[in-house]
Length: 241
Ligand code: UDP
Image (cartoon, rainbow, N blue to C red; front, top):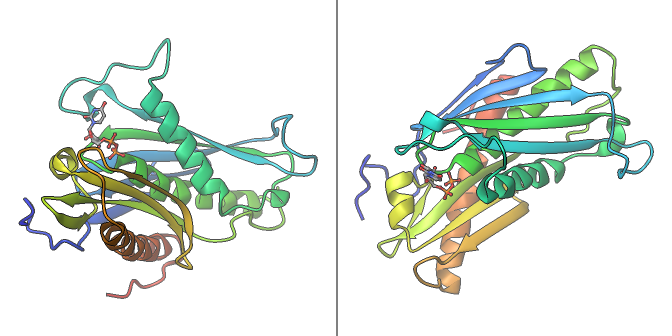
């Protein structure tokens, strides 16, 4: 099946990450997957929620889409959040927490805010990949300032989507592909190829075990490439082709 932008089935859109995009936040970046653009910030608060064990800290996340980020205006969430935003905020939080050691940030809460400025599919996965970059930068500052002794980040984490479109498994769906997909997968994984979370929904039809594996393999390779990009931005490591 031919893709609008002539990508191969296993190709991702171009990824761009501009770090320190919002200098008032302790960590921030603008992340782009093709036309999808998300602003991610990490803010540090010297207080941990009462429900976390003594001597540990916490990370929480919020997600939102700006009114002009979509084709039809997205109403601001003034009085109440929409369910989708809450669901995505929680997914971002769980994904980032899965690679953290909270004993390294006792008495500290890090809040990740992901605001979509342009939506073209894959905003939740871009938020996780960009949220990680913001988190990493905030942690670097905490260490620099001597507020913590060691990094709470155990591993890199990133996320990508894939879906069955016209019977073909495709990586990193844009909006037109996403809206015609029979089923899609959101995959969150770490730098060792391990899984943090997978969501698969067969919205138009159920999928076979083989299709599940095909989507999984595409996503795993995609996450490897995103992590290489994160490392090139954060540690100036060269990306391998
Ligand atoms: N979308 C939209 N308005 C909404 C929700 C979604 O225009 O209120 C579009 C947007 O382009 C988004 C895509 O539909 O990226 C897919 O949405 P989905 O809920 O699958 O989340 P995403 O793929 O962005 O994580």
